[in-house]
Length: 158
Image (cartoon, rainbow, N blue to C red; front, side, top):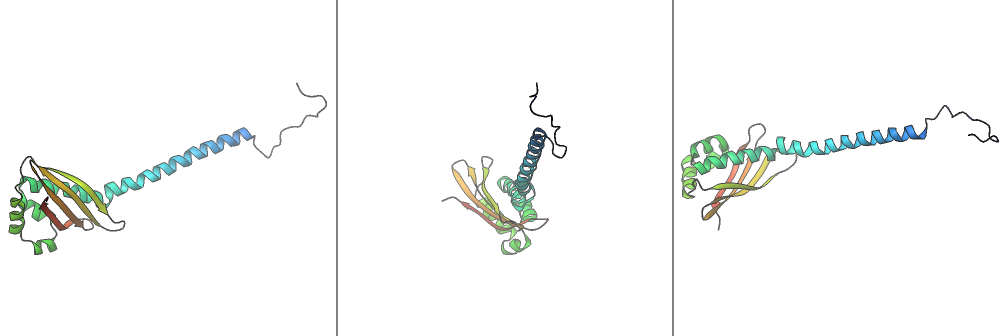
């Protein structure tokens, strides 16, 4: 059992055993890692859902569906910024959309959505694919609570 030549020494009272300290650091390490992972995942999620790019993507999807179905009045009135409306009349907009000859076979695909951190503006790029033709699209949205389109390009792909 114990060596008769060594006197008995009680454990020191000031320091916990090393095994308990290792468990403490393991638990703290796991908890710290979980907090870091949660914080790292929250930033992209916030940017996706709450940032200008996320809002612009939703607006672009809705606007493009209206254009494809030929509802140019709603698209013009609800999505275009008044400054853009001053440059492009409702009649010019409707005539431009009609010249694209979009139909039920057309499907939009957003390829790129980008924004600059700290701004309320975002750019959307993509293509509308129809039977036998494609239409390039590029929109720029801007605004705080009510984002509106400030620039638009809908052009047959060359």
